[in-house]
Each structure stands twice: as C-alpha cells, then as structure tokens.
Image (cartoon, rainbow, N blue to C red; front, side, top):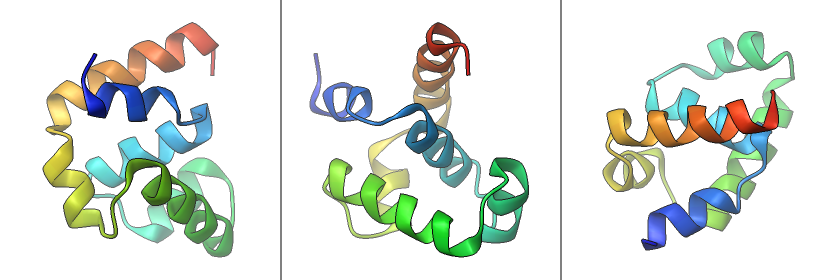
Length: 83
C-alpha cells in the first residue's frame, strides 16, 4: 500500500468528498453549495484534510493525486460507505 493510499483511507467520507471537489478545481462557493455547508466549515474541513495528508496547499494536493486515479479510489470508498 502506498503512502497516498494509506493517507486517503484516513479521511472521513466528508473529507474525501471535499478532496474530490478540490481535485475537480471547484471554487469554495461551489463546494459550499454541493456539500451544503458554510464557507467556514469548508475552511475547517480543508484544514483537517491538509493536515492528514501532510500538505500545505491545494497545489500540493493536486500534485500528490492525479485526478483520474484518485477519483476512482474515492468513489469506490464512498460507494462502500453508501454516502
């Protein structure tokens, strides 16, 4: 198991959803609409995701996870959780 796969499994379903939206280049406003939470909640959730992944920026996240590969992993995990 790779470092990235291990770190991804540590994310909650909500954190995985946010990560996927980040990888899809969604704006904060789009994220709030899709997830049904406030800007402040998005910021807090993003902070936790970045901490768990050991990154400091969206650019670092995108460099760690090629979108096509990550989205397949994330969707599979979410399907198992029935989210």
